[in-house]
Image (tube, rainbow, N blue to C red; front, top):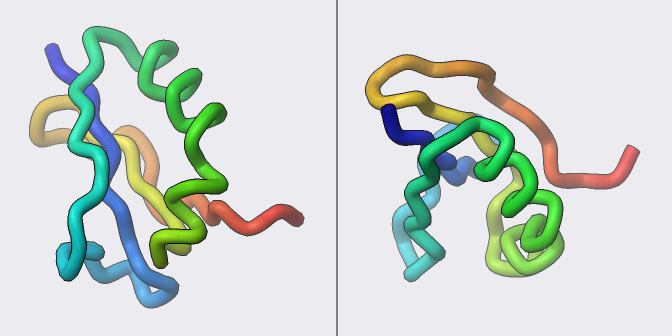
Length: 68
């Protein structure tokens, strides 16, 4: 199993127009920990929300990077 983040704009479309980290993780916890460290950089790069994928399955989707 591998885990990865899908980077999305505010409408849920995948952000693909500029280079972003394409990290792959061996566990959900590692993926979530990594996002906790880099979310501000992603937001500054135009990513508004993310979805977490395990292989081809979506664990959760549409998680905003904006502070509440």
